[in-house]
Length: 289
Image (cartoon, rainbow, N blue to C red; front, side):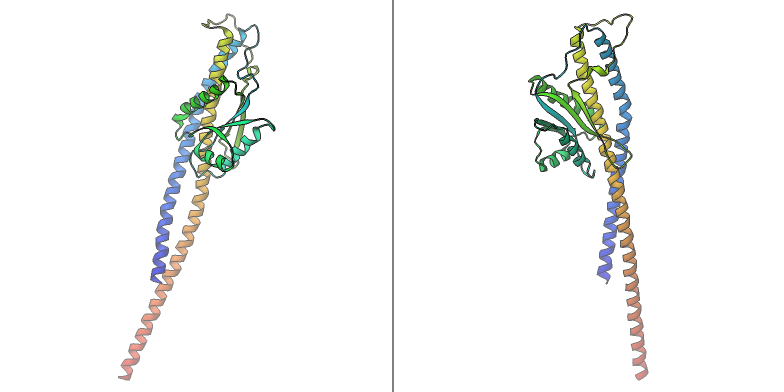
């Protein structure tokens, strides 16, 4: 009985250590999600500034701008997944959404960020032609966005792709993910209404070329925002997973504590019975003598 009680008490110690780890992971994930959200205002202000410049550049063009990515190449799907585990079905849902983007009969070329997502994609037999680790800190977002841009424009340059769709998750308070599918290429200039100007701005290059460069910069801003949102969503998914794990750990700890009390009580009862039996036997021997 003593050995069994000691085993239960050892398990209680292990579960308490696990509870501390789960609590720490929950706190880290919540802090990272909050930090990522705090960066969004700056990224969106940057995108708005570029959008304003595009509106001015378009007003200088006698004809429409050159469409970025125009051609008959394949469809590239940029997928932002999780880098680390404990995120539930986060990666599976994003990969499901990415697979649904590909039109029947058309080649889809997947570019993926996130090692955990890459592992699941491989298990599904999904061919990923380019991959990179997802960020583990929000300060790495611009670097990853730049690497994605380089991979895309390498393929746009050789005309092997002519359409690009970005698939990622945005943070939500609800249990379900808010998965966004955003077309990056061909670039939609129609969403930028022309800016009326009393005097045209001074420019150092042709307006058409300027509009193209600004479009590339705007795509970078869109990818940067998506990486930041995906990082926040990944950590919110991890926070929810840790909350569920903490609840299960607490239930396990309660059950083990109740069991240890029961075993301890049984042990005390057995000792009392043994002591009482020994006392009675000693008294009987004394009476016979």
